[in-house]
Each structure stands twice: as structure tokens, then as C-alpha cells.
Length: 229
Image 1 (tube, helix red, strand yellow):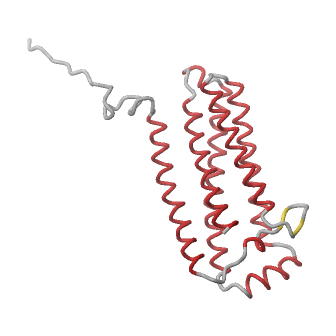
Image 2 (image 1 turned 180 degrees about the vertical axis):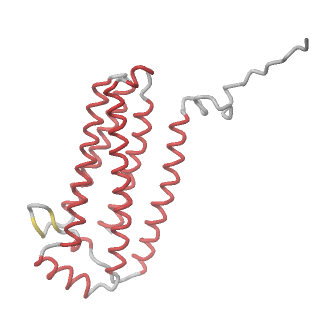
Image 3 (image 1 turned 120 degrees about the horizontal axis):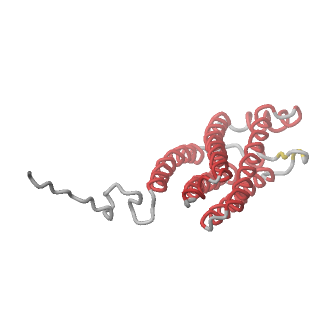
């Protein structure tokens, strides 16, 4: 009978196909970074195209005139509402950090609580964006007559391009926020069911946290390009 030699695979190699390809970095986290990198190129392309058109034109809509309204307050409050939206996203990023930290401590209640607050922040942001979109599309009679018609359409040749880029990029970002909320809900259900306690691993919370922080970071660039410049 011929002897059969069995070769043992070296799982310490980065290309071994083990559970952690690069030290403590799991495949899930690695693939999340790959996805975020590809998504960054997409957002970067959109913002670069917007910047090219924006700075090529000397006659561009003034953000302080376009985004000067807020619920209840009315008009005459430039960038106040979008500043609130930005603050909400930043706070949701903080609660996500706290959820990940609680997961590292295997604190199921803490991880669930802070993840719930993160979801609440995401839904609030989306509600604010829905109001902003609705207001920019429909507006109110006085504002449309005094600002949109006179200042933007008549005095700015690039108003259509501004609107196209604005709804494209903020809509694309909003779809990412919505996806993040859905993913956070899935992970929240898994936390409440005790799935991560059974496997003694909360890495999925950290992975979805990377996605959420990326969405928040992208908004900083969107905020800067559209509302401040």
C-alpha cells in the first residue's frame, strides 16, 4: 500500500484563505473596505464633475439664497436647516461608535441601544432631506416668485445644471443612508436575538459601522461642495 502524504495548509499566510486574511482583519471587514473604496471613487467622480462645472461658471446660484428656508422658521435662515441635518448625521456617527464599543465589551443591551439611536438619526436625516427636496421642487408661492424665478432662473444661466447635480448627488447619498438604516435594522434584530452572543463575536456591528462612518464622511464633502462653496 502506497503511503499518502498529506500537506497541511499554512493558515498564517495572507493568501491562505483562512478566516482572517490579514492578522485580525476578517474577510467581512476587508470586503467592506474594498466596497467603500470603490464607492469613494463613484462619489469622487460625481463631485469632481460638479466642481468642474461649478468653477467653470462665473454665474452660479448662491447657496445662501437657494437653501435659506427651514421648517416653522420660514425663509431668511441661510443654511440653518442643512446645518441641523449635518449635526444629526455627526451625532449618529457618535452613537455608532458607542455601539461598536459596546459590542467589543459584549454588552448586548448597550450595542442595541446605541444602534437604535443611530437608526433613529438616519431616519431623521432622511426625513429632513425629504422636506428639503419637496420644498425645492414645490416651494411656496412667494418664495418661488421672489427667489427661484427672479434670482436663480433669470440671473443664473446654470440653474438647470445646479439642480441636476444637486438631486443626483444628494439622492445618491440619500440612497446610501437608506441602505445603511436597513442594514442597521438587520444587525439590530440579530443583536436582540442574541446571535452575536452565541458566536461570541460582534464583528458585524463594526463592519456596518465602517459603512455608516463612510456615509457620514461623504456628506461632509457634499455639504462643502453644495452648501458652502
